[in-house]
Image (cartoon, rainbow, N blue to C red; front, side, top):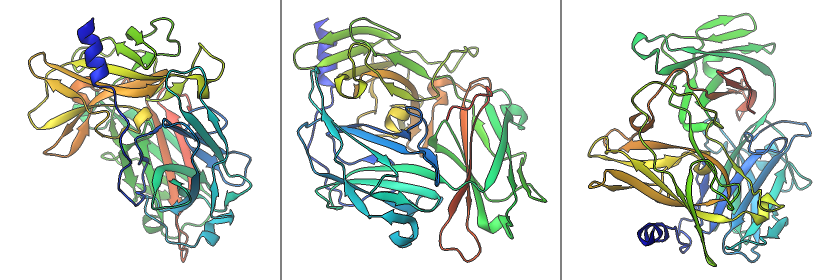
Length: 425
């Protein structure tokens, strides 16, 4: 028991000094180690995708926690981006109404928690900042009104609906991969003139809102009156992967799904998960998951946002390394499927075990294990999770259009579909 506690406490992430990076990058990123649990979603449903329609009452909810507690002077601004998340290089007058930036004034202190923190929150559009055009947007949070002190960058989408997208999920057309891959066919229906769809229109497809899976479509297979068809035999194939693993820490009074032990004292809360095994052999086993999502929940208290504990969660994977050149990671929407020191798994060759401890906020989490090959620079879950056509996944399709002579791309269409016929927006 003491050895287990030592391992847990040894690998609990610690707060460090802020990074010296002085510039924002155009992706979801946390620049300060004291910032945790960044959430960004359509306000109509918790942890939905951060997609809203232009000129409607829909809003984006954005929030985060500062583990240094107290009160800080956080400011934010938004920037219009191209379909591939580069700066659009247009004036803020072209895409913003109101002001260019504003201070985050909505914050609350944690209560009844072992670790103290401050919860910050805002919604967009608001009375100060109103986007005027559709497209990709980057939300930038920085300290003391100084953009050279970056804190968070977060992507979100505003759709100016001008086209309709119809899509279906089917087996891969490649015979050898029909049992392991899923293929997306879709059609863009439009009434507006599109003189050159090969040049002016792009469609991006991704799986489970994971940007690592993104596929770009620039050439429709067929062009029909008011219709563009994308069903080429060799495009938009995705690994089916497997259902996500999950654990439940909505209550710390008892051990729920996949929780082996809970240790707490006056200074910390630590959760030990059951050891995981590879799932890359054998038949597909159907189970309900949230397609990589996570939810901050606390059934022991009254307020999920300020009464949920921060925990050190110990992951253990009993598996051999797929090869000698690579690293394993635990990923999900809780970390934007990104690779970092915090979610990198350490390998014990003697025990043939991978393990890592990650600081997470109390709730319900989906996760999976992935292998990054340092030689090919590819990230794959198949070595640990396998891949099956039967796996339930959601797919997001974003359609961008640049009108002839226009200086920016507009997000004119969006669809979110599931191979189980369930829209999980």
